Image (cartoon, rainbow, N blue to C red; front, side, top):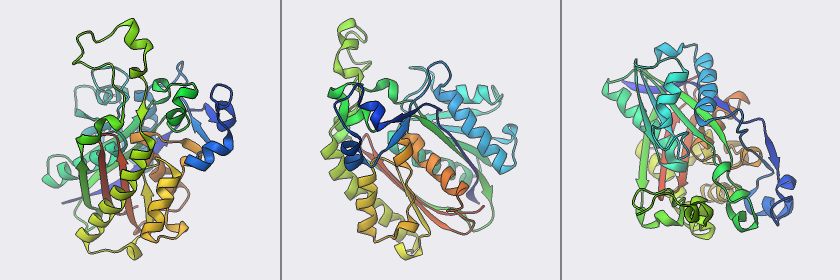
Length: 333
């Protein structure tokens, strides 16, 4: 038994924040941001309207519609996010509730940041191949903007991170198609190079006025370190997937990298010698939506006709942890 993706969907908040908008509270320019990240605009959530769970619900309902399925046909939910609506429980059960599936199926949350969706995809593939489940909903959704230092001091992150949700539905198939291979890695030696320190349970006082007003509640990123490791790990994990299946980059029809930074994607593209038409990027319009970035990009690529039945699709991600991952998929719809 194999697993194949039968439906994809995405949702992004209506609130568009351009680079010029950021200049109103950050000492930066449109040219500075585009030169370093490739980002022109991003979506930030509306606190009166958007939650991680309801954005995920909208993406999931679109994926179900495109798959020709009803929510009750889902056997299991895998929800990738590092920005859940509550400290606990995770957002998986909230999505389950919003889909009207409370008490019927299990939901699992994954906290692997930018690699979260591929970790979820790999887990779903393993569950389906084991025969445990037949139809699994895998979601990546994030609200990052509320954790950003929205001042000049936070310029290394507030110009990059953004909000949104993407979803994919995997189903069992006896056909020789779908997820061909996936590869997962991590290295905790670099955990503090990209993280949000608090609120942490190992503090003597978990919450205090001083803690909240300090920098530890905001995203910290050592951008140079992340870039140096990302470009190496991206290439390694992509080649790992190709070698596992006896494929080469010439066999690829489309490569969708995690939308971390357009300059990282372009560097990896040059290393792999892939032409522009074989690489899909949308970070220019959405920024880095962490676990949501890859499923949003898959959904958009499919909408735009850049991903077609029979195409060989490669996914790859690198992020906080550090974690990194890849998957090779024989696209089936």
